[in-house]
Image (tube, rainbow, N blue to C red):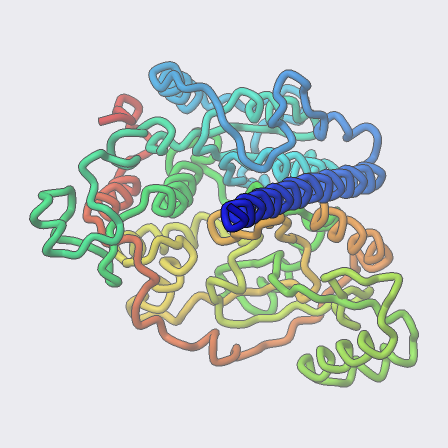
Length: 499
């Protein structure tokens, strides 16, 4: 009997212990929720800081409509009626409407055309538009928004732009409009990680053609390269307003942010290229440098101007560590001579991962690219920029592309989330605030009167020849679709977008 009583007491103690453990787990979860709430509050505080640096008349582009609770998210969802979306896309692509043309005049042959590739990241797009609105001479440009996702809120935002001419074009082969068939995800597509023998037994699509890594296509990755190639073909070869265009075309993306003097710098780059590098095919306004630092003391600047670029970088980093830069503790830092009255530009071999942001070229360069479309479309790499690098390195009887670029960037990347960015904390406002503060401190150095060009052979990365791509582009259907986009001419009015 005492033994039974002891067992009962032991069971009660075990049950009480488990109950206490359960309570502790629930409290931890509750505290985690509070921590997430605190993160959200910090995010809101940062958003207010971002808004404080935006002129009041431009707040309208940042307004989120209450009817859509997800309007402040970086990813969008939208209507599911595929038939209506297809009809709307065909209608807009056929009409080729230029909004605000009655206010700012028609597109001229030398008008700067700014082409923006848009997916679904509405928050980033809002801030790109705000930055464009503040750029000097933006009213003399044409903005072409190229969409691979049809969404009425995004459309309303774009059509609300009143500071320059605006056109929308819609990529007609998107995953959205082809959710259950190529170029979307066909139910009979091979699983990404299927082995060749397994794929052959399954008799799935393209079983005999995995990529160079043995993987099968993923539509969400192939779409970006398709879209880039389609929009370039569309702008240069199919739009009526560009039929005789000979000016510069700037390529941006929805998660870019521009400085107010980027058009001014574009003209300086073009003039410098004409004088010092007539064989430079590409201009570049952006860079992926992550750290910049201001040095406003005259003696230090004079001393460091005599250093090589690498020495400047090292000296700037050492100075940053020494002083700890408490008032400018961002991820962005401006090296001594990048922003000044006479600013440096560099002439160097073009490299995809370094010079793909804020790229600029004209119709002459495009024709040379389009003539080698097989080099672009057949290359097993889902990245459009690496495919362009492969094309550059394999041009018959011609050297690689050369680029002239700003050492002090005028285009910045603010997208923390996306295909190549898988951060768990994707707070758009944090990076936007950093770029805003950077440009605010750089303001005395914007609109330089002239630039000084230096020629560089590039480092090992610039000159390393691609031996193979990154894969993701082994499917013959992707290669054929890409190649066929170049064959669609300006007069092909009756061709069907959908098959």
